[in-house]
Amino acid sequence: MRTFTATVTVLLATLVAPFAIAGSWLTARVDDRGEYVDTVAGLAHDPTVRRVLADAAADGAVRALQEHIPVGLPEAVREWADRAATMVVESPEFPAFWRDANADVHDQVLAVLQDPDAPADGSITVDAGPLVHLVLGRLEDRGIPVGLLPDVALRVPVVKESKVAESGPAYRAVEGVSRLLPFVWLGLAALVLVVARGWRAEVRALGFALLGVALGAVGLLLVADPLAAAALDRVAVERRELAGVLLDTVIGSLEPYARGFLVAAPVGLALLLVSLWPRRRDESPVPEPEYH
Image 1 (cartoon, rainbow, N blue to C red):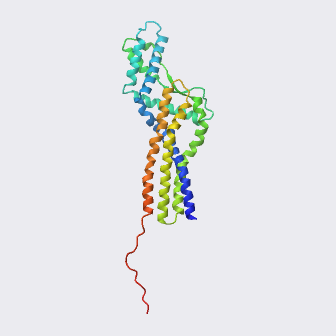
Image 2: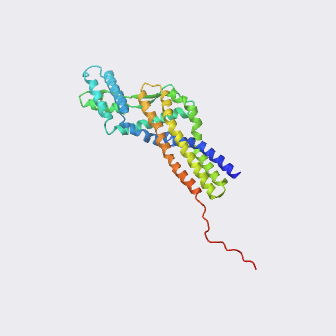
Image 3: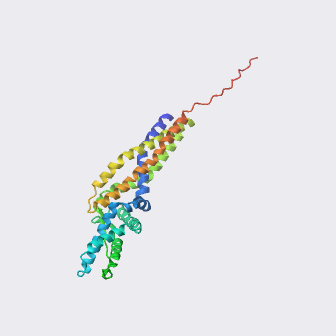
């Protein structure tokens, strides 16, 4: 009976493992703003991100100039703005801007996901106003009176809020469970140790449980790419490239995260080998009893 219970518990732990890994990833990489920002921080050097934001900043700067300084603008102002925007996104200040912008994006996304009554008639946006300010500052060096302009606001759309809101019910259902699943797996592993009979059975059962973790990690590695493709297919937005690189990076972080759990495979195999180690035998002869 103990062997049967231990076997069933190991199977349950194996079934829970991929969901526990995915849940811990969701908590560590998506829910936590700092971890999310760290995950996408490297995109500050991505050519697509730089091109999209440089184009948006140049467009915003030129529109502001044409609106508030309708006469006297040089014909080359568009070319100058493009060059200035390229210099801005390639400057040392851009990574810091990108981190701040994504902290704001994270807050916008969670506000829609967590609140079923949140308005969802707009878009999740990147606040590119600071980039426009830097572009205008470089144009001022060319003699353009940018001091006559008011503060220029520019929000670059990433994804429609309605698309994010569609995932809200699933997110809210998963969020609470995802925090518990790692503890569920640990509870099952502890139960295995309790019901197993003898240290060899305990070590063997724990080895199989760790192999189940590795198997769950392999399953997540297999679904990571299809998951990213499915998420991108749901995106409908003007700046699809920006949404694409963000989704690819966030969901793509599941692969290295899951890959870290593959270390459970060699550890589990080692435990199985230990459980199969031959029993030590006392080689000294057993004295026969003396009869009188």
